[in-house]
Length: 329
Ligand code: HEM
Image (cartoon, rainbow, N blue to C red; front, side, top):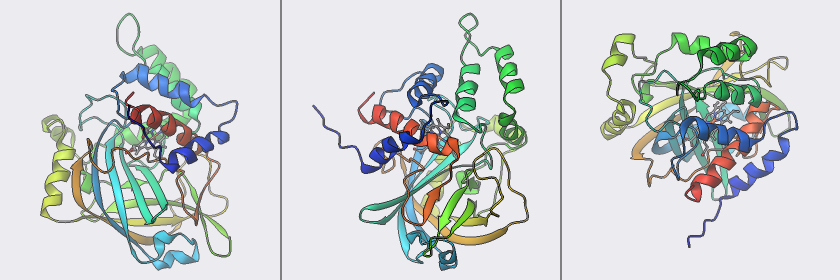
């Protein structure tokens, strides 16, 4: 019998379930709906099932010390394990699918201290609450008679959930990237930076590819192989390091902090906060990212969550998926 030691951040994740209040769905119900939608691949993630690992380092700028005491911005090189992924739990989905892509980063600050960023290549999310997220999956479940989602239910979902609109508008006008190395990634949620005087500043961040943002056009999408993003990243890493600049946006106190479907005004201070450099890429099976639970609430000193209900719900949902997959279910 194999005995699995669950990492400490899974325990943090479970404790975060205390944040889930009674008018929200149960994380177990959300995960079982993902399983109804996509089936179960034993040992695999229930969402973002397709992915690839990459490792390297991050060097943060001391300019950020004014806003946060996070060790991320010490100026020292911090080892990272990352995972690029395709949103959704369908193991057969191809890289040409018009859906969000993910970049999850685990920063190893020191022996026992980690910071996670678990981002998407879209600036806004498709739900302001966990209930909308669940309702959207239910609306896309296959109809028992046709075996396909019912267009009427999908329309009803759109008509009754205006908070899904910002993301669907973004997706309608933005194709998948030509390469992960040409994709930007966004925090989507608002976080709080806490400085040494215990002052809080609202922030959002994004990672901008040094190679520039490039997306496929409609013609190119038709001709791309199923796993072109993974193949491209593997080949690029052989030619040299791949980098992103981290840009932090400093919010005003009145800026939206609890709704990840709302854009911030454009006129905000932006600071180049560091550089992420990746040099080793490996398949997820047996790779360094496979057994990580990229729970976004794994945070070290200097960064705190807001009360965004989606952000707080992610932790127990990821813990539920992680507990299943790490035990081979
Ligand atoms: C209610 C909302 C959400 C739910 C229920 C949810 C659920 C999940 C689950 C169950 C996983 C797999 C966890 C694992 O087995 O390790 C996952 C992965 C992921 N999610 Fe979410 N998610 C939500 C919102 C978001 C948002 C807002 C973002 C980005 C801002 C995001 C980005 C990702 C990424 C990048 C991964 C892949 C992480 C990895 O590489 O391991 N998710 N999500």
